[in-house]
Amino acid sequence: STRDKMSFSVNEEGEYVRQHCNPEDVTDGKPRVLKLRLLKTNKTGKKVLKEEELEIDREQTQFTHIDGYQEKDPQKHLMLNILGDLASETLVLLGKSRLEEKVVQEQLKKNDEWELWKKERNIKEWQP
Image 1 (cartoon, rainbow, N blue to C red):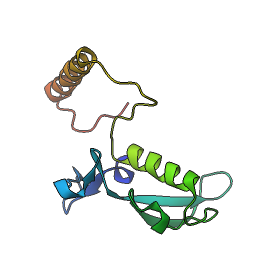
Image 2 (tube, rainbow, N blue to C red):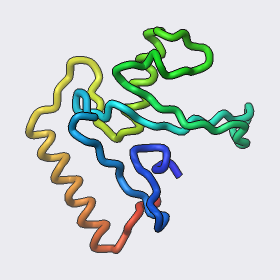
Image 3 (cartoon, one colour):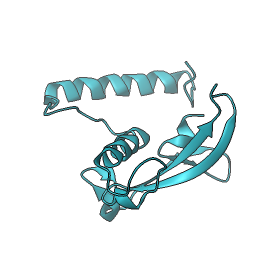
């Protein structure tokens, strides 16, 4: 499942639980340290050859070893931060764009409607 690769962990009952961060572990509104699963597959992508857990410190990406990248490669820093954003379910705006407060309120309202719709139908995990 995609969820166990994101900012969720599995508890003793086998349920997915969102991971919580202490305030001192948050930088610019994002978790400072993330753990991702890195899967190396064959050329068809169907067979997993190697699986490892990658721990990323957003402030010190040079300490995260990835084959093919030098220690202080700016491309590595960018890639790890993008992976961290995607894995932590944060909304990432590109460039200097900002969301207007009206748009934020509309999206929050739509999300509340969606959550209510799922609750009314007793849907715990959405399967499209």
